[in-house]
Length: 215
Image 1 (cartoon, one colour):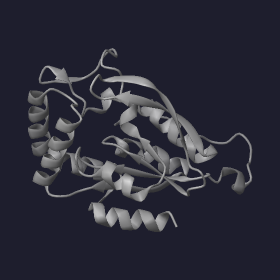
Image 2 (image 1 turned 30 degrees about the horizontal axis):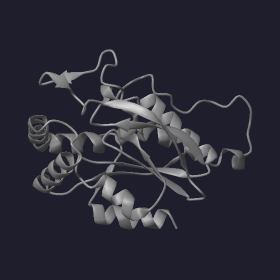
Image 3 (image 1 turned 90 degrees about the horizontal axis):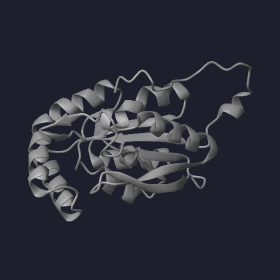
């Protein structure tokens, strides 16, 4: 996302001792195509997680981008990157943050919840828009790693479809149309996320690397 409204690091008005700037935790940004295994990986790791998809805007938010006659949920314009970044800054600095709860079937926020580090040295921030926050998190000194999960496209397509049907995320026709579109777009999406600062890794390699960071 090239939204210039995303805040980046700012100059301090006064000198602050280095220890005062040390974050309570650092952020691992985890992206990848929908269905690439991000949520499964976070469950296996058992670390604090900020689900960036919960920062989607409500369906009737003004100016939502569309495609194929419906809201294009793969466009960063459907997502509140400023609020997501502020939540990551807060949890990295204080060890806790209030985050929204989003209901995908109804495309609306339904409340808020609290994410706490509980002493963990890293927090996972996962979602298809995670790469949009790499530059700002790096500038703030809170970035531990930025990873884009990759695996064979047909595998991703199949697991995405099974998940979306099981969770009744959208009507079946919409799921098939979106899934086919994402299958075709996947190489371009991965290249874009890499250009924003993510490195590519298989789920297995990413799991090993993150476990090392969390020690």
